[in-house]
Length: 261
Image (cartoon, rainbow, N blue to C red):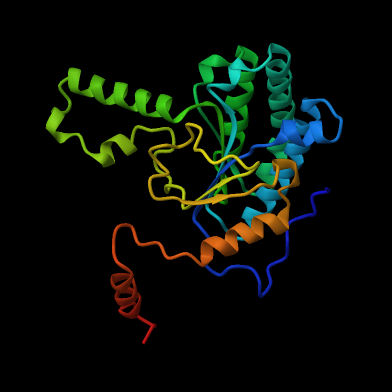
């Protein structure tokens, strides 16, 4: 299935879009195998899907898009596949960063950069620096990332502050921990999408996704086109986000918003 370009805004486009969308891009290998292609062909096709989804997020003024590209567990894959994925990562950075800058998209690569080659680490820094002044969509690529790693490195930073005498243990709060995780300063995900039919979080944004709305689809990532993404956004727009409150409280709150009389 070809990926069409981003859909134009229309009467069907949801009025209430999430500030932050997080996506586990699953199914590249299976997409390729179903077509008798090597698994790597699926990863290359998946890059085209990333471009279309980014364009759609820009069009809809979504603030943050976080994509799970390579987990800390993915190093267990066959060495050749890992090597090809790293090459694809480098190639994609080279090809896409100028396009991102033209579209006012800020790129951030979150995860443990130390696991990458020195050449790739330099390219990551260059790409981030090239787009750091962009004020539109923030595109976060989670690479060599794991939610438990994220919490561990945040805990280490806070522990060091305590050792230095800068804080007392009883002063540690949720807000303090949030300030030390890799996505600090950005809103938590509102919508968490997983493609490919699996039904697990896979160690992705564990802390940040505590109240995210989950949208699971059987569609494989290379087939996740603009129409499928729009369906996920419409589904999100129809949900009531209560954050522990009752439906009656939400209705009352909405009734008290100026302009709702």
